Length: 263
Image (tube, rainbow, N blue to C red):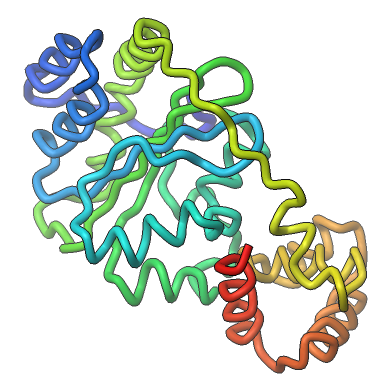
């Protein structure tokens, strides 16, 4: 599963999982997966995605209202997934398991404009994801959290329950995927948003630095990732800001949002 030594706590009842197992050959299985979460954790919000080997995610199921869908899921699948620590986890590591946002995010993610726009401003709390492998390169990602903070449920308790249930859910999801031959076509980013953003004015290394800044990486993390000094990171940041005619990380984020909307 995952590489964290997290405690696993059995739920009070396995009835919600048994109900889900009964839907394994039904098109209602994905909706049932969300209903299982809601049975254990009232008022939880959730979204299930297919992460392909390459290209953008496909939204499979969710329980957000129309307003939250327009403000979160629609821009996410249009391109903002590229800045998502959950998506990056699967892209870079491809390890099944259950993780909280803070376990996967870069050190300065909570100071990023992506976090401010899609988490703090909208009031999303305690987000986590479970990754269920569908072969070696693709997965079903189940993201969940609370738009109304649940004072009676500790985040660690939610993760412990899902850690306990993970092997069973993993087997059910694999069987559902096989039984329904649910093989989705991938949508290649050709050329990708990351490769294209700023390409007319930025060097390849400046685009690398811009991408890591957008994802919430600190200067030391950028230096380590790219194998350069922090002073060089500072110089790249200064030049890319000048070339884009901006003066802050917030402006960089706004430019990326505008770019991905035009893509």
